[in-house]
Length: 139
Image (tube, rainbow, N blue to C red; front, side):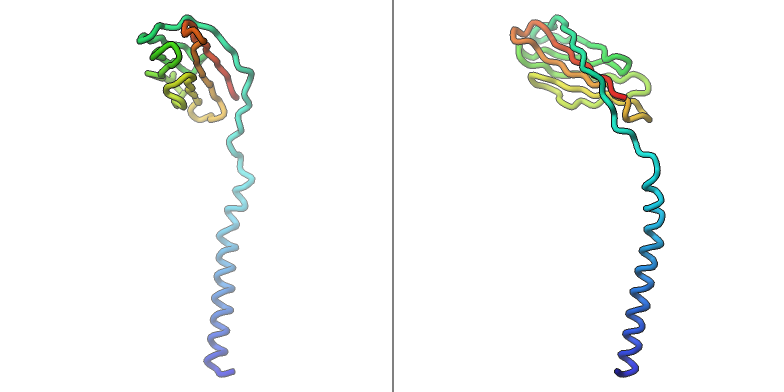
């Protein structure tokens, strides 16, 4: 083996050792952070159902979602609803999941406590005269 080949082999071994050592050093904080607290997965209670008179085709009605806010629905036809507005109370945020259709869905989440949730679903009965409101709380 020539001197040149020996130096190249030494440089390769040294470079590899430095690279692996640097990776091990950089990985230490990541491994240390895995024990940190993570957001809890929400545990949801039972769904409650209430029956409200339908507003009528072309009309709107507003429904309260416990402590989280309100949802305003438009009855588009005797079979379809549309969420026209969701308003979160102070300390909450809203997300319209399904805006229009035979069943609409809006979620509310407490700011700073993502596991605290209120879930809202609504659908019309087969005659289009009653709105079935389904609520579920999660902690």
